[in-house]
Image 1 (cartoon, rainbow, N blue to C red):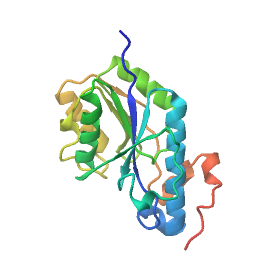
Image 2 (tube, helix red, strand yellow; image 1 turned 90 degrees about the horizontal axis):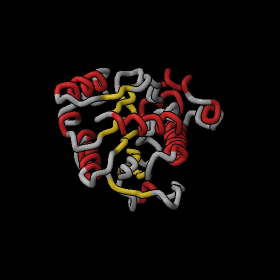
Image 3 (cartoon, one colour; image 1 turned 120 degrees about the vertical axis):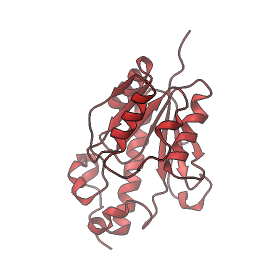
Length: 212
């Protein structure tokens, strides 16, 4: 029997000026930070689709029909869903539950890490076939991707999000429920002005660096 390919779920906010990448506004201005957020979103979508690892879903905040998304040109074949209400952990757990209860593995990721390439996504999908879970940590202590084969609310509930302990605490919780986990290499996301050195060449020439 052929195993189903994982669904690649990309969590994203609408790239509105002043509402995204707020920690980068001091370096880029509100419009520049929003432009960068849009470019990172498009880069992530491109890499996810190029990976060929499974169907790609954009899980959106606000919902897909909100006017905040007007003017954001998304691929026509993309499946678009709403994140819904609740804190980040509740929304992530709900997305994982929705997919995995249909007997499909899930790879859930953000859009902040340009190093999350098609090759790395394909590797994560391959590792998820042989493990219960996969995790790609980032240098600030969080993670940019988590993969699961079954609902696992324990790894999302009451998590200290946006702290340097998120990845370590997630791995501790996975170990406590005896999941076999593949941990990928530590990558860099783009959250603070000091992170801008990690932008790849194809993104770093864009017109971000203009303050309002």
